[in-house]
Length: 193
Image 1 (tube, rainbow, N blue to C red):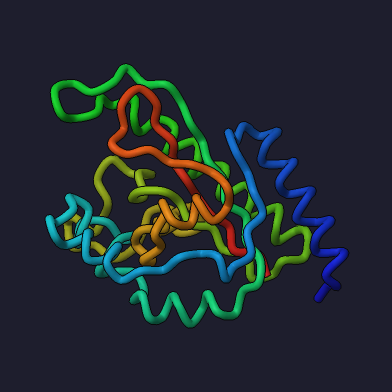
Image 2: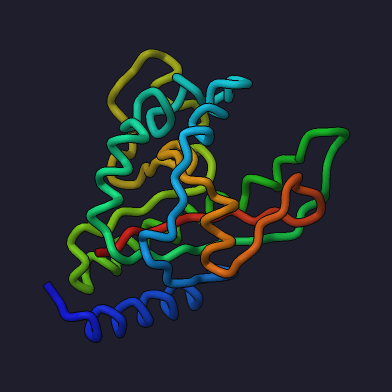
């Protein structure tokens, strides 16, 4: 493919590209710093997430954590990106609908970044979003359908793959605060090579 110096230049280009497209933060990250923990997938089921078995980009429809670990071992480099935005805050104990707007922008950026990475020669570039796929108001999985309406745009979440987002973000020198209060930050990842 490409030597390390050439790859580093292309990764720097991708970081700058994603920043210009509106990412709040973008960092290159060695793939071995991505933290995978089976307990993340456990949280999809305990307490059960409203997307579990109702979204094709979420469990049980995505690969197992073990399969993802095996794939991840083949990668050396990744880019982590975030989109953050101030929100109205919590309505009682639940965030308002504005909490999900930046998630849609993150999804767009992950797809754009993945495409740019592929065009730059990273033929195995693969993007992951934060939270569940929200391209459709109701996923076909909720009606026992198995054919995604947007197969080239839909992406699974970091959490669905078992990625500990908080630990991975920290490994990249970024931050993430829970519970969400006045500002929401959505995190995505693009595996490169």
